[in-house]
Each structure stands twice: as C-alpha cells, then as structure tokens.
Length: 314
Image (cartoon, rainbow, N blue to C red; front, top):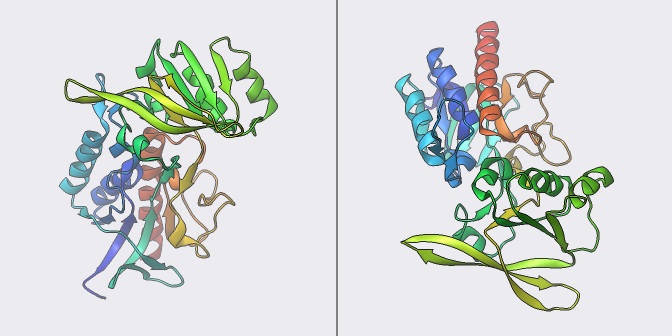
C-alpha cells in the first residue's frame, strides 16, 4: 500500500463531512478529510446560526464548523485544505487525486455539498450575510417587521416567500418573466397573502447599502424591467435568492448515479451509492431539507455505514 492509503477518505467538509469524520475517527478509522473549495461548507458564509441544537444563544457559522473540525481532529481525523480533482472508483482500493498526488482508500464518503446559485452581480457577494441570503429558513428570523425581496419563480421561491411572510412586514417577489414556473397551489398560497406583491419581468441589477459603525448594511435594490429597460431603486432590508442550488458533483459524473439535477442517488434509508464502499452524505444527496442538522445526521449515517461495510469486507 502507498503511504497515501487510508481506510476512509471523506471528500468535502461542512456539517456532513465533519460529523462523518467525528464518527469515523471514534471508530478508529483515522479518516482523511479533503475540505475542498469551501472548508466548512455553506455554513462558513452564514453569519448567525440559531437553529442548530445545543446552541441556545446561536453561534456563528464559521465558529460552529471550526468546533466540529477540532472535535474530529481530537479523535484522530486528519484534515487537508485541498481540492480533489479526479477520482477512480472502478476498483478497490479507490483512487483519489489532488492534482498530481494520488491517495487511495478502502471506503469513501462523499460530502461535497451544494452551492446556492447566485445572480452573478458583484454587490450580492459584498452584502452576503449583511442583508443578502440564499436560505430563508436560516436567516428569515432576522428580518422581523422588515421589507424583503425574493428572486425566483419556482417552487423554491414560493416556499422561501411563504416562510418569510411569517417575519417580514412586506415581501416582494422579483421574477424575470411574466408568469411563475411554480405549481399553481404554491403560487396561490403565496399570492393570496396581503403582504406579498410581485415585480414581473424584472431583474435585480444591484444591491445598495451603506457602512454603519464599521458594518455593512443593505438599504435597497436597483431593479430593471427587462421589457421596458427602465430601472428604479427600491427600499429593501433583505434580498433572498431562490433560483436553485447546484450540487457539487462534477467530478463524479459518469461514475456515481445521480438524478437529472445532479444530486447523488442513495439507497432509501441509507447513504449507500450505486458503488459498494462509496457513501454520500449531506446536501450532495439532499435537495429537499438542506439544513445543517440534517446534513450532520446523514454524516453520522455515512460513517456508520462505512464502518459496518469495512468490517464485513476486512
């Protein structure tokens, strides 16, 4: 075996990868975690996390991930801030490359997560966490009695809007076309709410904000009507992007079975993929819940599945 051989390699971090690492290292499997593009996953761009059990007063997203990482390392996991560039799962041990460096593993846990789709305007990244969010269930609570905008026209946008009306005083949907793609039931539920209005045939051109006491604060949006070409500035406290998520599964195309949308397929009630010895956890295989706590739960499942599978194949 090469010096770069491990019993378990975890590709991706976040709550799924790091929880898998905690369980795998406690089972004495000495996992190696490749933390990837965004060490700590999507939570590292979430400022305040208030719905993760055990943190009564909330915790900063990056801090939560840091604590999880330290917990895994304490039990013997190894963490490398590197990006996996290629895999070969055709035979065991499985092969994993980081550029030119080859690593091998008896079992692999894939927890590469998903990334929210962004509009592609510079100001949205600048105000991410300061008014701009891609997760209503994570951040809606902070917009009590405020005016928020939601971009999107599918079921996700309707779900996010419906959730946000519990907090916001006023909610405006911004959609580039003149009708929504969402199911009629979802549309009706949202549109009959007196707090909701719609900016049809419109796109967000820019997020506007100020610096207050050294902190960034979003104050409004520049909207453009795509049919008339007119632009206007509106007051807004928050902007939620609901234009979908993209699972980070590029390197597994043609290797692991996935849904049309790119999410990995797992056996119901388990984390097993179509290849024996390869397991998937977190948002990479979950387009439905997409929460830190559910990701952590499947991370635990993946480590237990891997441990049992390895015991049977020793």
